[in-house]
Image 1 (cartoon, rainbow, N blue to C red):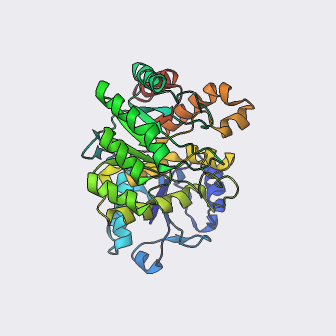
Image 2 (image 1 turned 120 degrees about the vertical axis):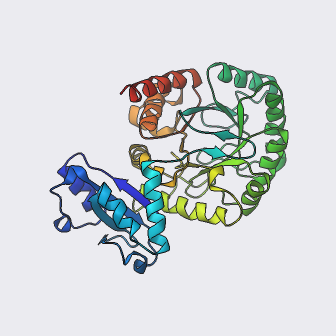
Image 3 (image 1 turned 90 degrees about the vertical axis):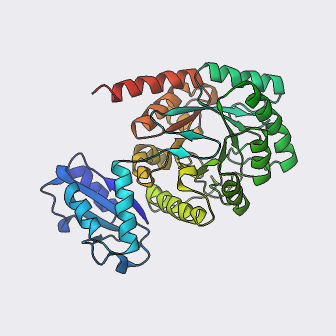
Length: 375
């Protein structure tokens, strides 16, 4: 079950949201709108789990709403004896006071500030910088430049995951990333991530000195989960609809945030049963991976709803096509849009921003933090 906490600026916004979620506004006591918390319970498989809770059913199957002032809401949830109710209580508390720390054998971080992850694609066909860093020395030099610019993580990828991209063999991908990871680990203490869906590639990168796996397939491969359990390393689990070759050809979401939240909920439960700790996971809603422009904007606007999982949130939207479509610019002129997205993501609770333009993003993130921490 996935818990989504909503607050509304005014009655009109509340009514629009209730209508979109299939709630009859006539049965909600709205006179204390500003002091009321609206908690959506998503993916409820058995309504009997909520017998002790005063819920409002929605038209979408498996979705229920609880509307109470925050103090009463926590007390009400504490009364629920079912496992589902206890899960809802735990997720709500994570939303209010999240513990997003990563504690893995290779990398630990408290996320007291947002981190900037620099993109290093050693591929001939990535959408933005494909072919620029196929030369080992040039790639290493670019990594060091990004570190000098303030990158906290270097994300090395040897296979393009742009829409329509063709897969790369395990051998070729290892040859692209492992030597670079090894060389980088010998000359810097910066955190190194490997961007791969393949367990064999991930293992080779870990053996070479990587600290983190960035899996755009969302840990679909059982062998990748086994690798995490064996090594104890941390991993970014990203949501992707379909696969890179087909992900933009068709997608259908009832509510993109709720649907991805349910996916994350099931993922966390699945990997934990196989020995992967909660503290090893970071979550990425997958901007541009099987989503429309509208879906991407909704995910950014409502990113803080994923804080219910208590996991660090990663956003990778740098130079992506939805920015180009909105601003009507090509990939070489998407810096301003990328910085706007990074700023919005940090405000909405992102913990890691994955970007091509490191120096500019580092400056933007520092400025946003100064504003947010000024009170």
